[in-house]
Amino acid sequence: MSPTALAAQILDPVFADHAVLQRDRPIRLWGKVAPQERVDITLQGRHRTARAGADGRWSVVLPALRAGGPYRLDAHRGSGGSQSLADIALGDVFLCSGQSNMEFPLSKSRGGADEIASADDSDLRLATMPAVSSALPVRHLAQPLDWRPASPASVADFSAVCWYTARALRRTVRVPIGLIDASWGGSTLQAWLSPAALDEGGGDRDMIDLLAAYNRDPAAANLTWGQRWRQWWHAEISPTDEPWTQTVTTGWARVPLLDLWEKWPAPVLADFNGMVWYRTRITLTPQEAAQAATLDVGGVDEIDQSWVNGRAVGTGAGDEPRRYPVPAGTLKAGENVITVNILDTWDTGGFYGPAERRALTLADGRRIPLSGPWFYRKVDHARPRPPRAPWHPASGQGTLYNGMIAPLGAYGLRAMAWYQGESNTADRLAYGDRLTALYHDRRATFGTTLPILIVQLANFGPKADRPVDSDWAAVREAQRRHVLTDARSGLAVTIDVGDPADIHPTDKRTVGERLARSALSVVYGRHGPRAGPQPVTAHERNGRVTIQFGDVTGRLSASTAPPSFELCGATQLSCRRVPASVGARSVDLPFYPGATRVRYCWGDSPSCDVRDAAGPVSPFELSLTPARRPATASQ
Image 1 (cartoon, one colour):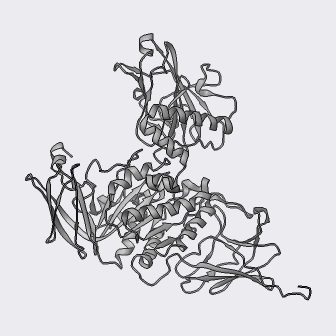
Image 2 (cartoon, one colour):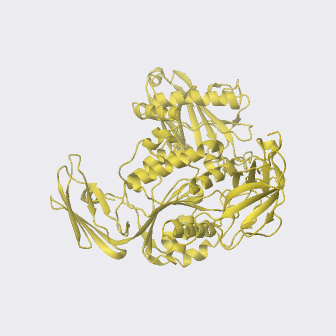
Image 3 (cartoon, helix red, strand yellow):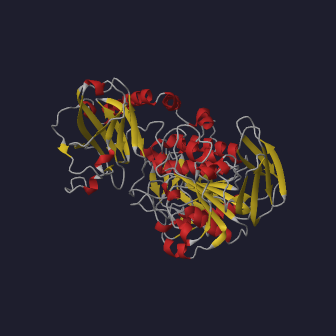
């Protein structure tokens, strides 16, 4: 947008042509003009006047309007300027948020080409929040939100799950629907929490404090973070090896091409996902070494931890080029060593070319190219999982809330759909509490009765031929239990539509349709289950365990005698699989002494074949109620 157009803005950039505003409830609008200036707002015959505060910010609340459109939204300022938005619709607005499976585009989904070709619905509007991560809340978008009516051109790169949900709803809900996708691949839940939610227990106190330090002094905070990173390396990789301080070349090989290692002419890392160290040297004069500087690392896939002369100067992730401050006193006259640790967890990895992207820029403006030679050293560790800094884009403390949710302000929503959890399986015990914090957070912003729909994690990973502990199963159970304790929440079970070999399954249509079915119950009050069949009780009697189910559509069924039920005692080693007999609304299992829990479909990629007419039974864990034993004469 040109400076002239930006100067003419009265409404906040979240309001733009083709937007959908929430029907049947007061409509809050806001923006920024000159301090104390008057603003007049008109929409569909409703008019309100506001006066900006000392900071230029203003807001008004228009009375509720029924579904309809297209309308024109007019804003006039006392100084004579105006702004008009065209093709505004009143309908239901859904926020779709999460990590890569929510971000996954329609063009890559199964059947996506046909869906894209038939996408032509002017009452279905799409908007994708710009991918912005920030250590502090962002109050305004840099550009107006790009709302687009559904067409083959607009839907191809849009969230497939969000799209299929709306398409299914549109068969029943005959009002305009607006979709806002705010997602980031690989993101953790805590990255989506506001500062208030983090302070109230959703985050890590030490990490929150370090983030605050980073906002005051990035260089000092990076030095502190480097000390933590070194502690991790010594504890998990090697207690003595310190590649960031090494000056010898023994064990290091020359980098053949300063680009993604899959592009190297020698395919030594062609199929490698893991960690690689890079190193180069530059020589400085005493005058140059006395200065502060900026290290331009360039683009990295996907996470780096960068060092200058053994001092940690920065860490980053994502597509943005890395630029790290190098404080005065870090450089030295003579030889200086630049070391970059790169972690790649999937697909391509390494530096992005061209080589000219990398340089050291001194405070006096002189740019010293890091032209090499560069050397590399592969880390022979199966799955290195270094800690992530609290300002890390995808897994920091509130970084994605700050950049992608805060700019929405109090935009009117009908519901939120949430598809996330894969990146939190390593800290599964905290997931339930963080999910609670997310619910409170979104409802504090968008309304206390906001319905929230959860996509349960799909099957992914190796199949097990015996009972196993499973981080993925534990997160699924946290999602299920949270939904059951919240009447304005729904669950889409996807345990049967994943791909054990691909964390990004392509069947997004089924996921969206199950979300829509849950939304019809939770959001629109239609008859139907909001979370699929759910176990209610598990009783032991006469050597049998009976599990009673509620919210069954039709009757339960199974194609075979399900091998997916387990009885467990206090420990994982006590779990054993048992045969099951499936009835219309119950399942019977043989009891064994010492069992206190029932598990169903517990594993990363379990075999699950119990379902009702609407869909599969969710994986679950349930405490076993023991039988009452008759009293003996001595009691």
